[in-house]
Image 1 (cartoon, rainbow, N blue to C red):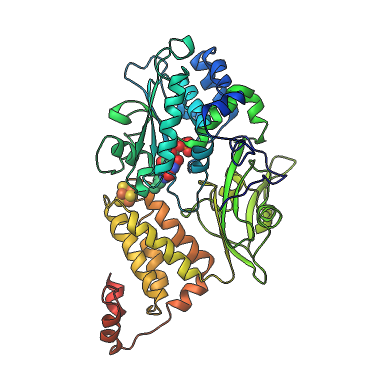
Image 2 (image 1 turned 120 degrees about the vertical axis):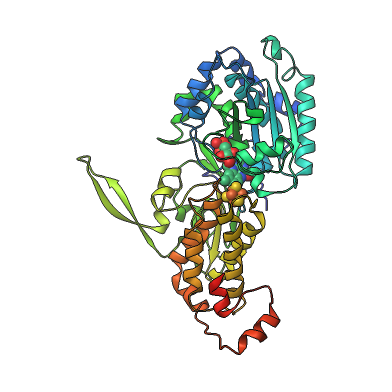
Length: 471
Ligand SMILES: Cc1cc2nc3c(=O)[nH]c(=O)nc-3n(C[C@H](O)[C@H](O)[C@H](O)COP(=O)(O)O)c2cc1C
Ligand code: SF4
C-alpha cells in the first residue's frame, strides 16, 4: 500500500520526504535539504528551554496513549544523578498502523536528528531504537544512517563541538506485540522476557531502563521534536487545535477505494471527509458499516450512528448535541468524546460485506496470541474470548455466548498489569455494544444434547453447549 503524491489537503511535516520525487534516504540528500540545522539550533539552546518549547507546543505522543510529550520530559530532573536513557519505540505493532516504517525507510535522518535533540533536552547520553523484528530492512537502514551521522559529527563525542556526547544503538525485537508496551519493551531491551512492569512504581521516567529515568517515545513523536525546535513551541501549537496540536499521520486500511497513509493537521478533517473525499468512499455498491479509528484496540464506531457529545454554550454552560458519524472530528479529544480514541492513527474501515462476528474473532485471535501471560485475567480471558468467538464464527454458538463474551471482557479491563488488558477488552465490549443483534444471532443456536459429541468431534478444542458456559 503506497501512494506517490500527497493529497492536496495534506500538510506534510513529518512525512515531508516520504515518496518525495528524487529523494534518497542517505545523509547527503538530507543535508542538501537543510538537515541537521535544527540540531545546530538546539545545541545553541539550554536543554531546559527545549523542554519548555515542547511543553508550549502541546505535542501529544503518537504511539497510542496521546500523553503530553513535554510533561513526560519534564519528569526528568535537570540535576538527575543517575544516567538518563531515551528509547525510540519503533515496534509499530498495533494492527492497522503503518507509519513509523515509512519514516525509518525513507527518512531515517529525520528520526536521528529528532532523537539527538530529544536526548540533549533530557540529558540522555545513550539512546536505543527498539525496532520490531519484522523490520530487518528498517534496522539495516537505521544502522547505516547512524554510521553516517557519526561520520559527520552528529553523533558520538562532543557533537558539533557542543560538549554533548551521545550514542544511539538499534535493538531488534523478536516479533511480539507486547514489546511495544513501554515497560515490556524495557524488559526486552534488558535481555529478559518482555513482561510489562506494574505502574506505579515502574513509570519509565522514574524507574525505567536499568532502573534509571528513561524517556520512551514513538518514532513520529520524536521526529516532531526537530520541527518544534525549528518553528518554536508557540508556532507549532498553532497547527491543529488547542490540546490537539501538530500534524498526524493517519493510516487508512480496509474497505475504501483509496487506502494509504496521509498526514493532516490534527483535527483538520472529519471522519466523512477522510473516508469519502480523501479515500474515495466505499467500494462500488457497498456502504461503510464501521470504523476502528485508532488501531485494533480502539473501540469500534458504527457508521450509521449519531454520537452524543457535550458542547460548550456561549454562556459557558455545557449542552448535549447529537453528532453524526461523518461529522466526528479526527483529533484526540473528539474521538475520546464519542467513546473511542485516536490511538496509533490506524483507521480500519469495514463495509457492509463484513461479518462483525468474524471481524471481532480476527481481533480476538490476535490478542489471545499476543498476551504475555503474566496476569490471569488477560492470559485466560483473551483465550476464552477467542474460543467463544471461534465457535460463533463456526456456527457452533450457544445461547448466552454474547453475554459470556462481554462478561469475560468486563472482567479483564482494569484488572491487569498493563494496558493490554484494555486493548483486548475494548474491541469485544464495543463490538457487542454496537452490533448486539449480530452477536445475538450467532449465539442463538440451541444445541441438542446429542449433538455435542458430533460437534466435539468436528472441533475438539472448542468447548460446546453447557460445557462452554462453564469455561
Ligand atoms: C499493548 C501495547 C502495545 C503498544 N505498542 C506500541 C507500539 O508498537 N509503538 C508505540 O510507539 N507505542 C506502543 N504502545 C504505547 C507505549 O507503551 C508508549 O506509551 C509509547 O511508546 C510512548 O510514546 P509516545 O508518548 O510518543 O506515544 C503500546 C502500548 C500497549 C499497552
Ligand atoms: S495485561 Fe496481558 S499483556 Fe499485560 S502484563 Fe498482563 S498478561 Fe501480560
